[in-house]
Each structure stands twice: as structure tokens, then as C-alpha cells.
Image 1 (cartoon, rainbow, N blue to C red):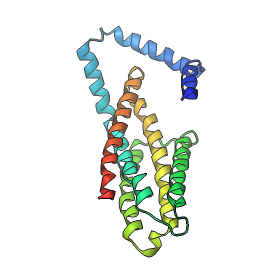
Image 2 (image 1 turned 180 degrees about the horizontal axis):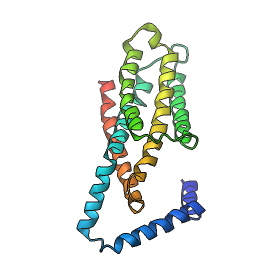
Image 3 (image 1 turned 120 degrees about the vertical axis):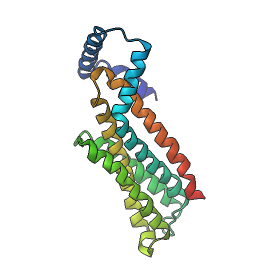
Image 4 (image 1 turned 45 degrees about the vertical axis):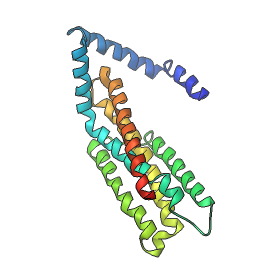
Length: 206
């Protein structure tokens, strides 16, 4: 936490951050020249921003509904291994977190800029439900360690990558001076997804 606080305070000193801060100040000043930012104007701007990024937000909700509905509850409670025993859920949790980190880092190498494909990929993650269900009640091979581990790795990879992609793309769809608002709204969508996914996770227990 201390390291995060230090890095957060150092971020403003980076040249790229200074560039965007100056650009934002200029954009805000230009907008204020058109009239004062009253309460009604501000609310209208916020709702316009929500409307602009709503599909990105929808994708964010779907990502975390799927992820939290499966991980960690299903992985720690429902799958078992006679070979790995108590180490099995630990291995799966490690795989998820490692691949989640890899997915988040992949945007530095390749950023998917097609919003339709990104959001479609989020919806496609709903296929994890029948796939993981198959690991419980499907053919014998599906109930072994290999399919579950592979699916867990893919779950983590897509979770990290698509989250980063949507978080990067959403603020770019609005004017520069409203990008920060778009980022905040995106986080709110993410929180909704976390809450919904946590509730749905109980169905694995039921």
C-alpha cells in the first residue's frame, strides 16, 4: 500500500502526465468560455458520459459477473483432485491470478481497439458457465485436473485483458475534459459487476 501511495504521487511528475494535465486544463478552459458549468450542465454532462460509455460498462459488468460467479467459490469448493488434494484449489487460484496479471499486462503489447469485438468477447465469456458446469457433471475427462486448470487460466487471462481494454477504451470515447468522469463511471460499472457476480456465486453453493 505504501508503494502504491508513493507511485501515485510520483505519477504526476511523468512527462506524459504533465502533457495530459495541460491538455485537460486547456480543454476545460475552452469549455468554460462557452458558459459557466452550473449544476444542471454538470448533471447533463455526467449522463451524456454514461450514455456514451454504457456498452463498455455493460461489458465490464458481464466480465465480473462471470468471473466472480466462478472464482474463487467454484474453484475452491466444487472441484477436487485425488492427486493434488488440498493443493489443487491453491494451484487453481495461483493460475488464475498469474494469468490475470498477464492479461492486464498484455495491453502494453497489443491493445484491441475494436469496441464491438471487445464487448462481444465479454459476452462470449458467458460460455464459461456451461464449460465449468461440464467440469462438474460432464464426461469423465472434463472432470480431471487438466481441463479445469486450462479453463481457469483462460478465465484469468480474459478477465485481466478485457478489463484493461475496456478501461482504456471507455475514456477515449468522450472529450478529453470528461475522460476522468468516464473512468469513474467505468469503475462504478465494475463495482456493480463485482456485486452481481458475488451474489450469483452463491448458486454454485445452492
